Image 1 (cartoon, rainbow, N blue to C red):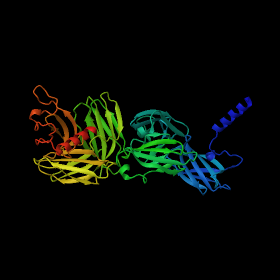
Image 2 (cartoon, rainbow, N blue to C red):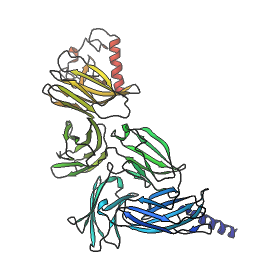
Image 3 (cartoon, rainbow, N blue to C red):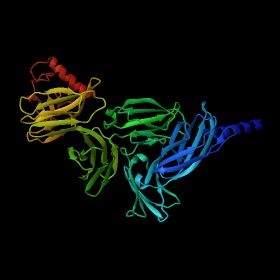
Image 4 (cartoon, rainbow, N blue to C red):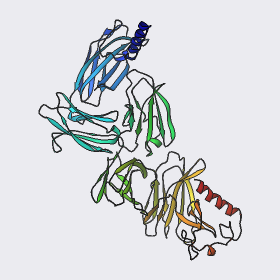
Length: 546
């Protein structure tokens, strides 16, 4: 029995220590041939790999590792050479495996190649390592230390000592998604710049399991060549359902996902998995820019990376003091300085492309100065209205749930009636009426109306926005009052009157005895309770339920 237990334990240990033979890093068995692998850096960070042909091999797989992490792979190569681009510097281990037509391994080999610093490719490499971020660069014999600084949702700096060939610094506890730029200098904060790295996506990518995003490409580690699948959701809707991507370790989703989602301002949540387990997740922020907030005693500076081919940005901000109004600032710059209220501040930034608003991100600064980043926030005003002497132009944030939009408008002149039309585009132009103008934009989804935004253009051309998305007024009868939209007719928030000593409601500031016909249920005050009153009550109750 004792011998059996010893044998069983030995078998278990052997099973758990088995390493996939796909990349044996030059080690061979009796059934494989040791291959001769050569690797040279041809330009920048491109590695040219060559190897000898192996008898019985139908194809070859190549893997490149840095710091024991896979940075690039190629599979199914039928020749004996390949060029591979990497995004880092320093020593890279190149592994080559010869595959038979049945999937067996006919040979393997490896080599190490150093990718030197090149001034043409940014000077530094930044990549994810779990909850940490690793920065690496080529060292110089004349430099004893380097100054590393980073900005984004997390900012900081540190000093790194030199090594023989490649320097690196691990930003511990700061994940890749929270960093928008990294700068490495020689010696100190005023030293010569070694390199600058800037994220090519909004605020990085929220990652787990080593999955990360660059541009519109997902990357992950797949050293055992398992079949992988990619799924994606956006705003609660599945937009990519277990897309098979084969045994690769990257996937460009740009051509698989509708531009409505890619550029709609809403985060896209990706999951990479095999048939049996989840490899990891990553979040794509469509704007291509990241938000950063810095504070002084009296000011709040909000900055973001420039978005390609965009020249205008909208900054929405509001003091956290009760009753504060929302302020809107349109700018061509990539930073603004706002006054810092004692109570705190909320700020949201969007970019404007062809008259449409797309989200960049938002942040809340509390009274103590703590900054909380909220990613892209969609509860703030999503409508943009501009008026000139003869016309009014409205544009709004595209919503993935909307197939068309309902635009309702009404002049402020006495006796004006509301009109509406539906459109599939996100902009509309109107003739500017005398006396002012109200406009509301929304859409229907599953038979329910969702407002996008509302605004009032005064007779002088001043634009004010409604935070509820409706042009609000108070409806009332002898017993209750409610909030209603003067433009689209929606009603919500029915409450009984709260009477003061003078018989005036403390909420709607009217005297119920002088309101309406005095008949319970006569909501339109025509002296009768009719179907029209029932329809109005249904709208009020629908507003309460929502």
